[in-house]
Length: 96
Image 1 (cartoon, rainbow, N blue to C red):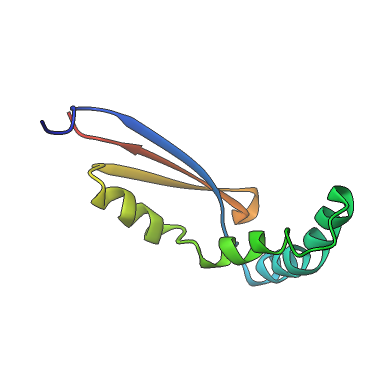
Image 2: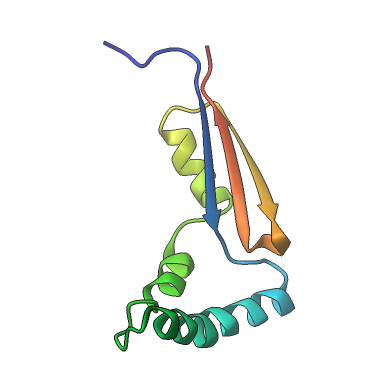
């Protein structure tokens, strides 16, 4: 049995801004402020909140993620950067 025709996929992911100044500010906040704030709010002294910035920095984004989605059988992938590139919306459609 093959894949059913048609279909739509939407992915909302954190991403790294392309603009150098925004990217530098974002990474500084993500690496220095967010982990401390998360650990303080959760009353957790471990590094439970340090994984987030590492996962965002290592996860494919932009055209790299769009290529993975295309390989999964989606014909078109629209890549929409949001909030200065801090998040990206991917909307993919599968051919009929």
